[in-house]
Length: 245
Image 1 (cartoon, one colour):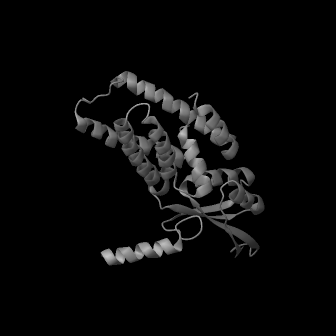
Image 2 (cartoon, helix red, strand yellow):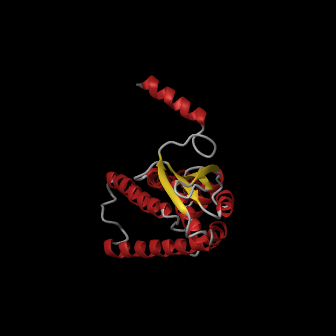
Image 3 (cartoon, rainbow, N blue to C red):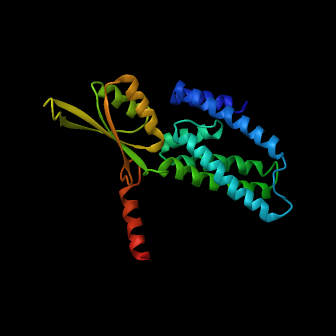
């Protein structure tokens, strides 16, 4: 928790105080339940680690459980502190998936830890981090939905909403000319495609700025272009699928 304080303050500055409050809750909850489970099951674990296979079982199931938990927290627009925040910052400015960003950050730390603990421990830790990153990407980007979501927004304060999307979410959108079916009035509509982990922040901001806004959010299962999967990469992947098929 002590080591998380400067990273936590940086995250709060970049993502806002509400994000900071949820992150603090996530950090406290993680510390609390880690201590709680250790007291219940013991700090030596429940498996006999003199057997190599049990070490691998812990790596596998621990990575899946940890990745699922962290992924659910990130999907809600929060984190559990520490390197999670660094990973989200990297993901925000590079568009690298959150799980992959966390793998990069943790990989650097694990590589350094090999000099303190052992190469064997570091190799096990890398396996766990890789499984965690896979689960985070699965949960954050596609659990129950597609890779991203498309939001259609009609509001009297579209300019402010658009500025928020550009400056805070690091995305852009498209203004579509629309007309009310009943009122026959011309009203602009904003369309924006966002990764799943940012949609909660957009909904909250729109509600704060214009409670009377009309907003529709739909699942988007493939997004091609800037900020998402490049068109060229998608074409190459389709060629590979055809060749393998």
